[in-house]
Image 1 (cartoon, rainbow, N blue to C red):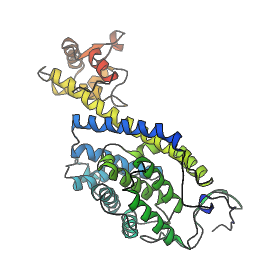
Image 2 (image 1 turned 30 degrees about the vertical axis):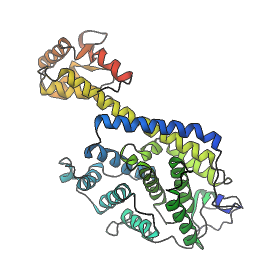
Image 3 (image 1 turned 180 degrees about the vertical axis):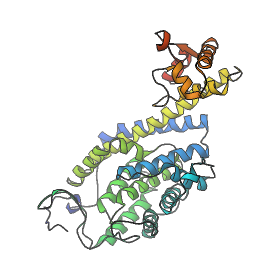
Image 4 (image 1 turned 180 degrees about the horizontal axis):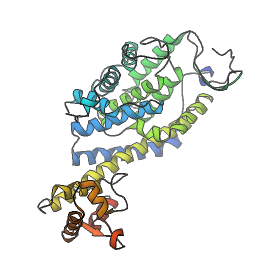
Length: 392
C-alpha cells in the first residue's frame, strides 16, 4: 500500500458530488445524430433479420473486447460455446478442442443477465452476483480478490512510476461510506430509467462514469461498468446491445479511454468532455454495425443475381471471401495462385474457374497480366456496396 495523501482534487471530493452536469447545447447535436443513426440501424436490422447467430456474434464481441480492454485474452471458441448454449445456437466443433470453463460460463451468464433481464432493477445483490460470475471460485487466481463483496479498507488507487516516487492517476472514494455511495448510485440508476428528461445515451454515459469512479471492487470494475452500460442501453429499447458492440469501439480507443477517464475524474462535476468522448465512441460502434449490415445486404443482392449460375463449391467459397472483404477478403483482388491455395484445386482448374466467373460477370479482371492478373467482384456490385444501397 502506498502512503499517499491526495490533494482535494478528485471529482468525488467536489462540493455537490455526485450531481453531475453537462453543457446541453454542446451535447444536443451529438445526441440527435446518435438517435438518427440508431434508428437507421434498427431499420436496417429489419431488412436482414436479427437471428440468434447474429446476436451471438455481437454479444461475443462485447465479452471478448471488454476483457481485452483490461489486457485479458480469452479463448474465443470457449466463450462462443458458452454463449451458444444460452442462445440455442449450435457452435463449431471447436468446442471439443476448447471446452467451456467456469470463466467463460460466468462471462456468458453476466452478459445474458444484462440482455435478457434488462427489466429487473439493479441491486447490490445483482452486482455481487456479476462479480462472482466474473471471478469463479474454481478458477486459479494469482491475487487474493474479495469475490462478491466490496473492496477492503486500503486506498483504491491507480498508480504508475517508481515505488518511491509514484504517480497516482486516480484514487476512488474511501471504503468508509461506500455502501451509502453505491446505494445512491443504484437508486439513481433504477429511478432514472423512467426519467423522460434524461436522454438514454446520456444516462448510459453517466452510469458508466459514476460506477468507474466509485470502483467498489478489488478488481473487475471496468468490466462491470461496461455491463451496466450495456444494461442501460438495452433498457432504452430492449435490444441495443444485440445490435452493436460498445466495448469493441472502446477497445479501438483504449488509450484515449483511460486518458479521458483520468482527466474527468480529476476535474469538476461538469462531465461534458467525458460525454462527448462516450457519444463519439457510440457513434463508431453504430457505424461499424451499419457497415456489417450493409455487407450482409450486399452479399444477399449478389447471390440473388447469381443463384442459378451453376457455380462450383470452390467458386462460391472464393466469392464469399471476396464479398466479405476485410483482411481475409483479398482487398486487392485474388490471383490464380491464391485461388488455388484457398480451394486446393490444380493450377489449371483455378485458371478455368476464374475465367468462368469472369464470363458469368461475377468477377472482373484488374489491370495487369500474366501471373500478376488479379480478379475482384464485378464493378456493378462494388458500386452498390460502396454507395450504401439498402434495398435488398
